[in-house]
Length: 157
Image 1 (cartoon, one colour):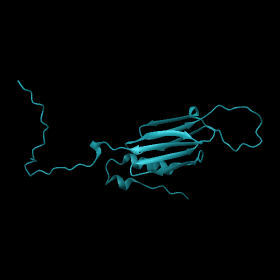
Image 2: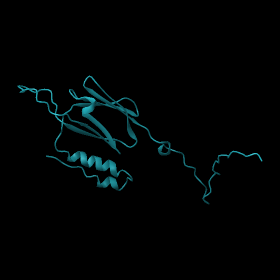
Image 3: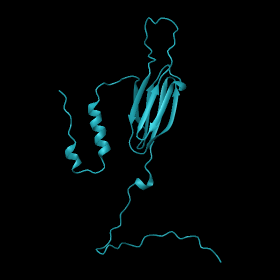
Image 4: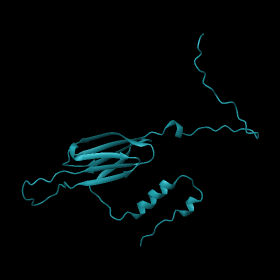
């Protein structure tokens, strides 16, 4: 028996979390779980992550990594070679597409392929404008402390 969570009560007390609720709602609806190729996600620090994906048999030209807004897409595909008749095929060479939902301000820092492992390092860099800032509180008349001004270069006549 499968139950779906209802996020409606959270909409009454939260503002701007629509994307998060949509992600949670979409995650509930995933039916098939694709386990190939296997991958690891490691948190390296407060703002740095690494995805390691096992892509044995794929070369750099067979792989494509793109980031569109908050989605990282990794595609792999190669031409089928006819070298003979397989009696057993344990090394999969099938095409794949893996998608990762990224948080805001997360971007790919580096990507490398070595020993059949694709490593993608991600970093979250929040712009200064998005970081917490102190808000000045004014009096009842609506006046606050005078704003700081940057002095312009003085020109000598």
